[in-house]
Image (cartoon, rainbow, N blue to C red; front, side, top):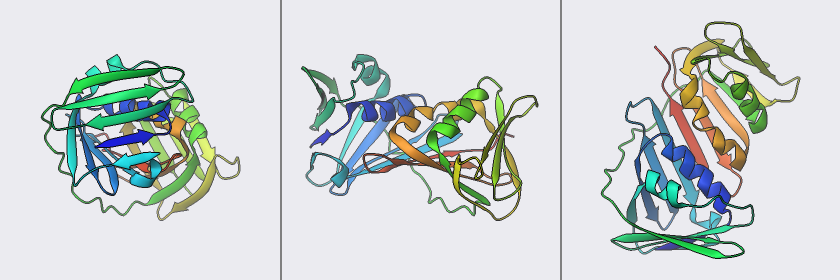
Amino acid sequence: MEFEYPSAKAFSAILDVLGSLVDDVLFNFSSEGLTIKALDPAKVALIIINIPSDAFLSYKVEGEVSVGINLASLIKSLPTMKKMDKLVFRANEEFYEVLIEGVTTKKYRFRSIEVSATEVPEINIDFKVKALVIASAFKSAIKDLKGVESIVFEAPNDQDLYLKAAGGGVQAKLSKVAGSILEMEVKEPSRCVYDEDYINRILKLVGVTENIEVRFGNELPLNLYFALVGGGSAEYLLAPKA
């Protein structure tokens, strides 16, 4: 199988986020596109990435192909991507190659590894809060809370979303009035606490999306949905903190 992705930098951000959660991952290719599912060892966070075949510059696959990847080795080997670089990925039963095409072309070859498929039950949660948030505003709010250990997500109404340090002191407010929230629906006022570190792990995806759909509720997981600029999506599910 082989694909060519228009932005090596964007694909690198996806790899970095995956690498912050798991050591190894399975790339699953079909005629419809690429799917990646990763559940962190503590079973606290789950990420699902879907990139349809039409989001690639070229995409060739025969049947269904799975490639096991050691993320630490791959990320460590790849260079810093430039804005105009393209990424080419090729794989057979034993090896996979990554080519970074820019001013020069760099090629990296790795052996595929055995990785168990991540079994993910269907996500069917009645989230009480849904907010479409400007990605850069969300990142700024989370950065303001860096190091607080736990972040409280609170939505008292359908206008405002508060992100607060669990112990008090630091607070960030996203709102429709200020323009940081584009759409918001609150079925019931909600408040829930999540691990700050696990939220920071996926912030690199902010660079490959414009808006984030934030969903949560009282004692419910946090669900962050990223519509990737080049096509496809990344969905992140984080368990509430006890």
